[in-house]
Amino acid sequence: MKTYKVLVVEDDPDIRELISFNLVREGFEIHPASTGDKGLALALALEPDVILLDVMLPGIDGFEVCRRLKGKPETKHIPIIMITARSEDADIIAGLEIGADDYITKPFSPKVLSARIRTILRRQSGEGDENSGPLIKIRELILDPTRHAATYEKKTLDLSATEFAILKHLASHPGWVFSRSQIIDAVRGDNYPVTERSVDVQILSLRKKLGEAGSWIETVRGVGYKIKDSQE
Image 1 (tube, rainbow, N blue to C red):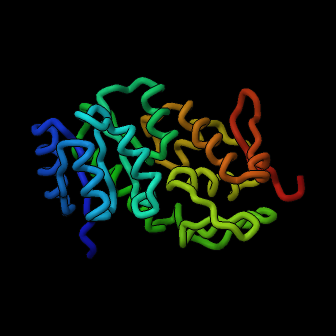
Image 2 (image 1 turned 30 degrees about the vertical axis):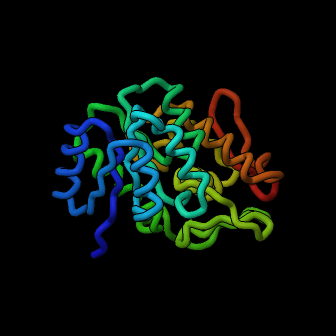
């Protein structure tokens, strides 16, 4: 069985040690970093399977570290979970807007953190029922859940794990309208503590990346979102 590498970028030594201790017990290989600069250097050197990134770091903060990692071809594919003591919508949305795949607020349960990591790794690798199955086609849009790949007019779309999961869910049910909470439950699991406003951020990003096809994702006022059926 593969041992997954987790880069933990956290300046508080007690929290860093607690995270590392519990994740090692869960079978992960841990690489700690106490500053944003060290985190950037280790991410480039190690290419970890997932990065746990604190928001409040000395020097370069977590948002800037995330922005730089997602802007580099060598590291943009690595899932990032933001760790924050702040649970305000604005902070959460800011992280998602710059490419973070998930977030968790302090204090948190080590078991919940481990579960979040494993969920992201499953989505990233295409394992599990939610990320497997035949090709999904809507006009020139093609999704391959097994390879976790999406193309439009034969051009590959650069989607995060969460963006792909949302697009897959909508495209699997063309013409169906889903509320924001239904979308969260479908792609993250029941009772996932994420704000509904963050779904709007992901949809906005998807529309931009889809280009002309972005108009296929429609807002149904007062309800949620749907993707147009190929017959519409």
